[in-house]
Length: 537
Ligand code: NA7
Image (tube, rainbow, N blue to C red; front, side, top):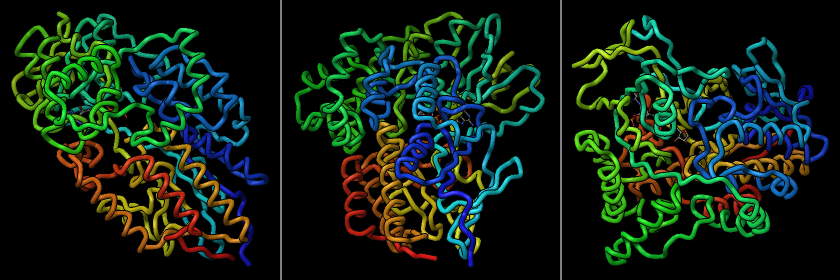
């Protein structure tokens, strides 16, 4: 007779996902759950990413929990795009307000999770040598947590100090009087460069791929703006849930090619100059990510802006993105990024012209030049969507390893479950809209669906739920087909794993839109969890 597991659920990670998952499971009544968190505090992404300039690039009043009316009415955001410490404070407040900390083990990394077929439960191992059993194993590890430090020869001999932006020291880094090198011009490098440049003696930005960045147009919230948003929250959240990307933006029903060029230019100008941020792409013409010619209108507009802002035409041309459609790499949002290249203490190195050959004790060497550096900052991103889960040795039925199963790319049913891995749930896993949406909204939808599924098992005296191979295969095909109907496959992005050498090229998030995806998940549940099998011990 198999024994009862120690816990109902183990949740890995105490960021947006893990905190809400714990709260929701507690709401089911009588369920025991424990969160393991590798960091020394709650907050996930917002605990780790403390680099200069780190801030949200989704609007705070959208990028926040909606599950508690009291919480969203009480909490006051300082600005449209708050800095990292404020978002971390918010998550700490959530942990306290909902009394979550008593079930969170900090400074503890989950190293392995093995499914026990006799007991219908998971045995979860941590780096402090502990092992617990739990009916459900829930991954809340986040999509962008496994730091990618490129294997550039010589890093171990570097006599300066180096950092990855996703593991930034809590005490901060003093750049004053220093020669700084920054590798990477994704969302992170683009946020960090202006702030580092303002402090350092000299900043060299090493760019592999130029990016289409749009100004943030950040602002401090007035009491009137805050009051208006709080009054409108019901409608804001409803509209966000009914949208493609989880943002309550008004999207033009027109193709970018249907309107006359003057109208189109005026629309882009207004979005660039007044609105800023993701509205430029997600709140303009509906076909920017579907039609190459439509996309090119926005891409060319941004190229024109870069040429206007950057005074040195040679530098401007190196910063101008070409060869991939706008938005098919994650679109950055900046505050004075392109203007930074007008500073005397900033240089741009185009790694396509002069690749890095090695890191040397005194800095970094490209094919043509030796750059003296005291500090090297890697803003080189993450092993996205799969890296953080695969760091754990996850073994499902028959001892099958998730690393093996996903060797040719991640496979899931709805991005939530993996065939062969019963009772394991992945919050915002590959195959779900996740990183293409406003994350907290996507997280809430997953957490609520998972909690409902667990409640369903409880109500029916069931102890096992598993996606079928057939349902998974159908979903994987669908995710691929939808991606192929867009322009996303044209870019070497982390969405397709192109940033990690050797990673199989597969488009990982689900691009079919948040609203249709949510409906699909609801329909699956309403049809008695179509595509899942159940069992009982
Ligand atoms: P990203 O978006 O993956 O950007 C990483 C940047 O680092 C990007 O410019 C890469 O160039 C560059 N990179 C990566 N590896 C190398 C090597 N080996 N040499 C030179 N340059 C390299 O990560 P971020 O941290 O900016 O953003 C991640 C997400 O966090 C972001 O999208 C938000 O969701 C929050 P590439 O473009 O691959 O040529």
